[in-house]
Amino acid sequence: MTLKIIIPGRPTPKKNSPRIIPARGNRPPMLLPAQSWYEFIKRCEPHILPHGNIQFDTPVQVCVNVWLQDARKPDLVNVLQGVGDMLEHFKLLTNDRLIESW
Image 1 (cartoon, rainbow, N blue to C red):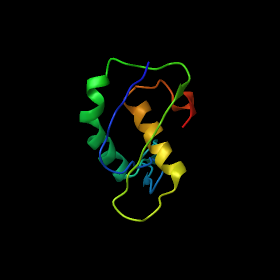
Image 2 (cartoon, rainbow, N blue to C red):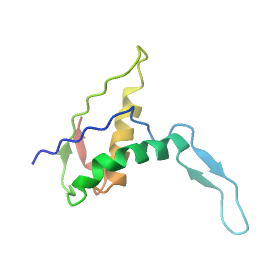
Image 3 (tube, helix red, strand yellow):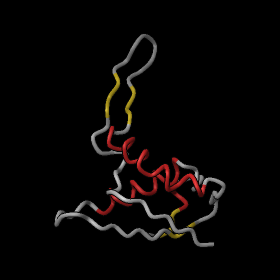
């Protein structure tokens, strides 16, 4: 099965600039993804929801094409992690560890 999804905008990894929520009462401090991650998820949602009934629970291969507006070269691992985390967030993958190759 092949699934093609086109998402405009730059992928954002979860782990860039995480936010620390201080401890309160009995609750320990929490580490939340960067705000840019949530903005990326919002951008992805209209492109992912039409595929909402599809879920992969076996190993997959993912092909990612990224076109950047400028000459800056992002860290490729961060770009791919952002895509993997997004696929897991929307439950297209049961776990992003299922990505065997990019």
